[in-house]
Image (cartoon, rainbow, N blue to C red; front, side, top):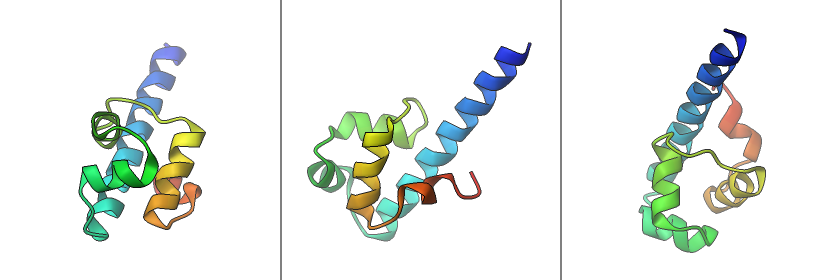
Length: 79
């Protein structure tokens, strides 16, 4: 039961981080293709992260944060 609850919390966190990334990208007027170019990540992978369907490693979050001119920890605030 605890493992199921932990997985649900992790999934929710993943979804919220994706939302923050999408909001940050859109606030800069960037397309997924432009963010992909800035980060060296594929459009498909970034899309999956934004939709909460894939989790991002610390390195990936760092690359996205730098491309959006935010701190990696900002993705976890109020998440």
